[in-house]
Image (cartoon, rainbow, N blue to C red; front, side):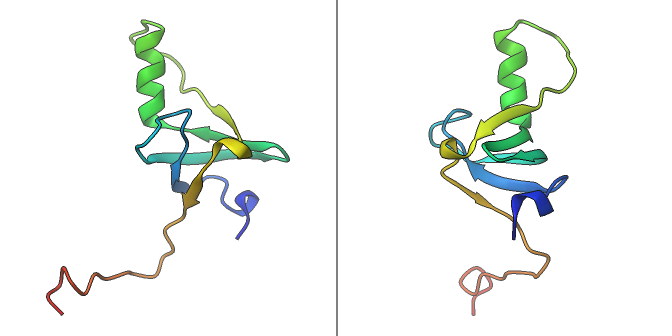
Length: 87
């Protein structure tokens, strides 16, 4: 799977510039040779707070590939936890 096939999709990613340890939910808006244009609700909240703004247009952040530790896309196939289901 390629990032350019995931435009408009939501992924879970580890991006230290958004938060050093917490995973972030991101939506891909664009793909370039050097990185991704993403929307990140959690980072948007921080952005608004830092700029002392009550509201603003949703920012789309450019994240260079080298800043992304990993990304996970949830496939439509259902995954089950045998342990949680008592199996």
